[in-house]
Image 1 (cartoon, rainbow, N blue to C red):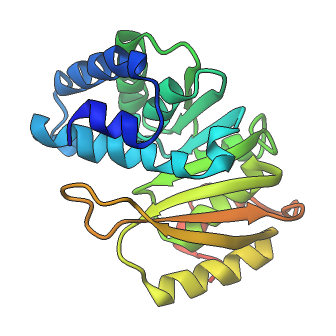
Image 2: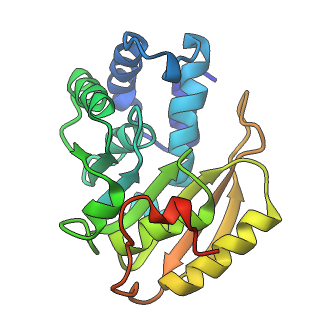
Length: 229
């Protein structure tokens, strides 16, 4: 998909195209084999896939967004360009990846995104608790684990957007059980609008209906080692 087509499809102003091109150019220079993607696929896999979240009004209206386990900076940086009035915190524990995020943001001229070097559980137990109206997670873990990460970060009424592949009834059932414990519920599952390589991707939107119990988040690593469901 061409960049301009991705922007038009998701209602992103064309004047942002230069920022997205700078972002992709800077990303292509990063010598990280774990994030290597052919240049011709980068618009699809990084920009179009990230901007798919804009199909939800909750994301378009967000003022504070957390990108959980931000990795190389997507979807957080792509959303920050599209939503200049929102603050986007990219939460990542690996210092090397935080440095990449900071370089990419600087190269693209993104001023409303901040890399937070922290374990998400530690951030959610401190300054990040209840601080966000949207949390995003792409390629981080099973739904039950993502929900435990996101629940404490979200304010009441906030939403988690989780990028997943093919529908998995077992994973979704575990997610529903964990959501109930954490004060959230599944509001909608929506397929990502097809693009080359979209691989039957889906976005799961969970809404926070009530307070997450104070015992969450558990200590770092507990959610992944001993999921709630």
